[in-house]
Length: 196
Image (cartoon, rainbow, N blue to C red; front, side, top):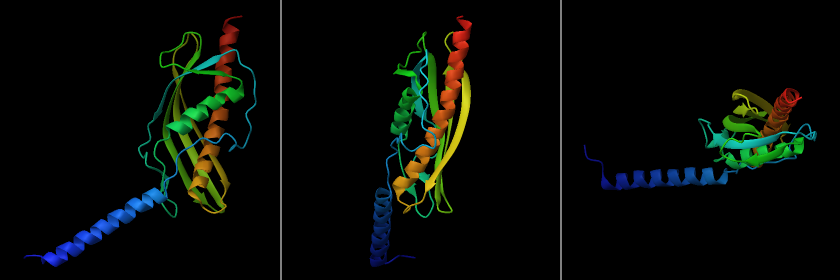
């Protein structure tokens, strides 16, 4: 059975319009994953540390790297590296000296960070976010241990803007940073006791 040429043209045109609409929708809902230090439930406590944190690697291991949510509309977000890098630099606010060197440093706590979950969802008058990461911590003179840290956070839903979902994700990331800082301070304290 032959399909009339005009029908093929109409179908082709419809598919083209659909693909353009889908692309336009993804661009319209795209929001960069930027770090927000002030989106936090608890402000960092600056406890000066004798340990330096050397960040050796930061990677995005999420299975879905294109979006952070699909409530009401897909929220396309792309690369999470800017958020992770700027967020880990925030460890300075907890009193750590932070440096970056791909090669492990003998005189620092070496840290490698792999994000494997970052998503948001809509609640009753709230936007919620969740973060999960595998964090490799190698103490000075010690063996690497992987900490699996998870945290959530939320904010009041003002107008369901895509940027609000990123802010909710930042609340989760900063809550995770609080937990990571506790682990790093303990690791540093153990090193100090060994040197006494």
